[in-house]
Structures are given as C-alpha cells and as structure tokens.
Image (cartoon, rainbow, N blue to C red):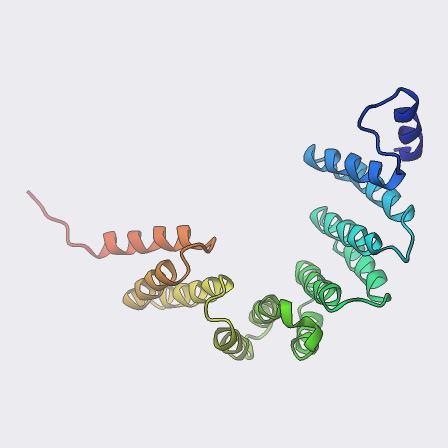
Length: 227
C-alpha cells in the first residue's frame, strides 16, 4: 500500500518492464491487481496514477473514469458518484459528458435512488450532448420508472422502441412483457414474445433465458401420449 515505494524499488532492482512514468507503472499494477480481484490494492494504484496526472492532460478523464468504474465494481456507489461529480466539473467533450450521464444513472440505480434517476434521466434525454448514449439513458429511465409506480414505464419503453428498435436492450423490455404475460397466464402471448426475442435479437444476453422458458412452455402445452 505504498505505491511510490513500490515504483522506486522496481527501478532499483532493475525490473525490465518498469515504465519510466510513475502513473503508467500504477496503471499496469492496477491491472494486475484487478485481474487478481484485489480491488482495494487496485484502487490505491488507480488513485496514485490519477494524482500523478496533470489536470490538463487528456489522460486525466480516462483515469478518473476508471476510478469511478472500479468503485462501482466494489459496490461503493457513493464513491463512484462523487468521482463522477469531480469529472463533471471539467470542460467535457460530448462523449465524456454522455459517459458521465450513463454512469451516474447506473450508480444511482444501484443505490436505489429511483426518483433522482428519473429526474436526471429526463434531463439527459433531452440534452444533445448525450445523443450517443441515448439508448442506455432511455433504458435506465424505463427500469427506474418500473421500480417506482410504473406509470411512466410504457412511455419510456415506447420512446426507446420507436428510436432504437434494433438495439439489444430492447430484448430486455420485450422479455419483461413476456414475463408479465406469463404471470397473467397468457401463455400463447408469452411464447410469441419469447420467440420474437430469439428472432429479432439473436445476440442479446437474454436470448438463452428466453429460449429456455419458451421450450418449457411448449413442453407443458404438448399432449402426453400414453402407451
């Protein structure tokens, strides 16, 4: 937990892969710690690299985002949000602003602050700087709305499907509709929606689960033949 000591010792013993730059060395050390699932040590290295990076350097934002994402992986959502707040005080490109928006919404959802998610998602949705990340923003708005009263969920879903009908996140929305149909004993409707997911979104993560449930429904509906 003494990164600068580690850096100079690595130089003293002639470590062949030691970068001349301290922050680059910390990046490499953080990667090794992350692969070993040693998140606290990785965070020390990441913060060391960030502290050693000039605020005017384009690498600063890159490293700050990495700190926020690892904090999120550690379930330190408040820490991740604080880091994003620090990033947002800078003059950001549209891509950087959009990334801050999506990550902020992600960690607010993880913290179950759904009212704050809805307020921010509504603001981000109409900001031209978030255009690249609009599918994720609309999806998160739909998720948060469902977790509240659900009144606006259909509007968020419709907005998403109208703008991004081929986006893989749409598969999750249709899967949710299929599960609602299943819960209401509308088995044919559930099978239809699950089949549509398989056809429309073959690369979506939810496809395997959709296929499994569809096959179980078909097996349950098929007549049993007795000898």
